Structures are given as structure tokens and as C-alpha cells.
Length: 260
Ligand code: 48F
Image (tube, rainbow, N blue to C red; front, side):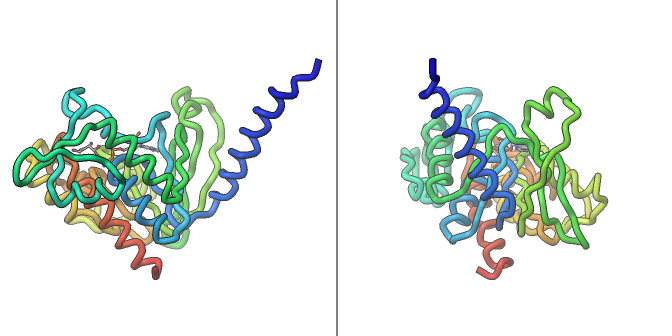
């Protein structure tokens, strides 16, 4: 008996996936971590015509957006940041003159959908385990299936080359950690290294997340909580305006650096 349908389905998935992977082996911007800052940056950069690949180690992109505050699935944004969400078609509800609430499931799914529809390619369940630095310029990410990494299987990774790399990995700033502690580079911070996140102070953390968003080394950028962790900023909890504005800011910096 012939398994015609089974062959068609498997063949379609394999061909389609590997076409997508091959098309993204050399990109303009690689973003590590599909959290809120990375997703906003991905959409802006893709809308500007750049080839953008996002690598997210978890099965579900979205980072810390899904769970709201303590699993109550609502988050808060400031009015000016709500405008960024409206560009994605996400609904916000006014609280007072300054703040709006957002259903965190609508926010997470809307950000992912918006980045993807703008043209960014999202590779989920793929972990960035290292970076490539040639002649003082960061120019690639070293990737593997996250289950391979989790099971500590001794399997060599592959490389995606990039003109710009954003660390959007949130609190651990994993990629900057590789640059500083493995490659031994000095980044643009007060010490040349990673200062580490301070405890909760919402107002200050929201402000510094945007201020701390910048190029840290040739080819290497940070957004969101990763940027704030590197420069020793305060954490801020379930308010997200700083994350969206950070994503927008890093996209603008990269567009300028890449001559767009
Ligand atoms: O932490 P995360 O949501 O990034 P963010 O844009 O936003 C921070 C807020 O969610 C929240 C906050 C707001 O008050 O403070 O924490 O800074 O998302 C980071 C994503 O990166 C993925 C991780 O699974 C998460 O989805 N990630 C981390 N390391 C890697 C990675 C890696 N090595 N390779 C691929 N993905």
C-alpha cells in the first residue's frame, strides 16, 4: 500500500523548513531571544527591509510576556509605549492618565504575529550557544537545537553569519556574557564588563532600560533587560513600556549603523 499523503506531508515540512533555514544562514540582523524588546526590534528592522532571524530557545516565543504579574495575565504599559502596541493591533485599556493595561496573552501572541508578518523569521527551540568574532567584530551566532543542549548531547552546532547581533535574552544577558567572559572583549560599560542587575525599582528601571540600550561592541547590541543588566540597572517587573521602547531604539541604532 502506498502512503501518498504521509509522504506529501513529511516532504512538505522538510523541504519548507530547510528552505527557510538555508535562506537565513547569512542575515543582516540576528536576534537572540524572542522577548518583547527583541520582537519590537525584529518588526521594525524587517519593515525597513533587512533580513532578520530570531532564535528562541523555548518552544513558545514571547519571553516574559505571557504570565502577567504573578500569573495574573495582565500587564501595564505607559501611554507612549501603548502606541507601539497599537501598531501591532494589540488592544490596551486605560487605567488613568499615565497607564494602560494589556491582556498578556493578546500581547505575547500579537507581538510574535507582528514580527513574523513584518518578515522576520523566527526559529523556535533553537539555542544560541556561542558567538563568532573575527578581527574585533561580532559576525555570527552558533546555534543548536535546544533539546540537544538540554540533554547535553555531544553534537556540534552550526553557524549563522550576521552583520548585527542583538542580545535580547533578558535578565541573564547570555550573549554579552559570552563576549565578555569567553571572548574576553571589553564592552561599552563603565567597567568594560557586566555590572549585573539591581533589585526592583520600577520607575528607574523603566528609564534606564531605554538609556542603556546601545551598541556594546562592533557588531554587538543589547536590548531590553539584557541591556539593563549589563549596565547595572534596576529590575522593573510587569510594566513593559521600557522593553518596547528599547526594541525600537536598538532597531534605529542598527539601521543607522548599517547605513539604512
Ligand atoms: O526576558 P525576555 O522576555 O526579554 P526582554 O525583551 O523582556 C524582559 C521582560 O520580559 C521581563 C521584564 C519586564 O519587566 O523584566 O523580564 O528583555 O525574553 C528573553 C528570551 O530569550 C530567550 C528566552 O527563552 C526568552 O524567551 N533566550 C535566552 N537565552 C537564549 C534565548 C539563548 N541562548 N538562545 C536563544 N534564546
